[in-house]
Image (cartoon, rainbow, N blue to C red; front, side, top):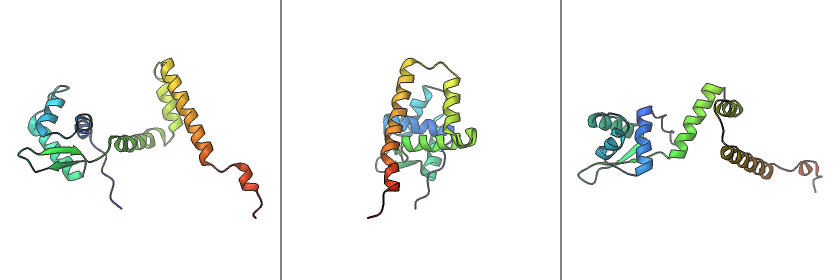
Amino acid sequence: MPKAPPKPTDSELEILHVLWQHGPATVRTVNEQMSQQREIGYTTTLKIMQLMLEKGLVSRDDEGRSHVYRAAVREQDTQGLLLDKFVAATFGGSALKLVMQALGNRKTSADEVAQIRRLLNDIEIQNANSSPSPSDDNAPAV
């Protein structure tokens, strides 16, 4: 079974966001995108991306004159990994505590509440469809 990629650092996550948003790119392109948000040197971006390659967070196409990097991890998988670690470390693994904290700390719009209700309804339907019905447990074996 292949080993899961490590948790990306903040800088690595920033680079992954560029690659997820813009697709495969050279170090120069990634650096230019990142430089729009904060000052960062080309060699710093290059070094981080080389480390990411060693960790398995990105892959590199060596065919052309310029090396083209692409994310080797999916955005959704990475978000799930980071969220799981955050919930475990911060909220003792409780999704309820996370949601209560998130909703209690800021004003939630009516649209957001409606979306949350739809999500909860979908989860209830999914749970109801995946669990055996109580009558099945008590049915006599034939």
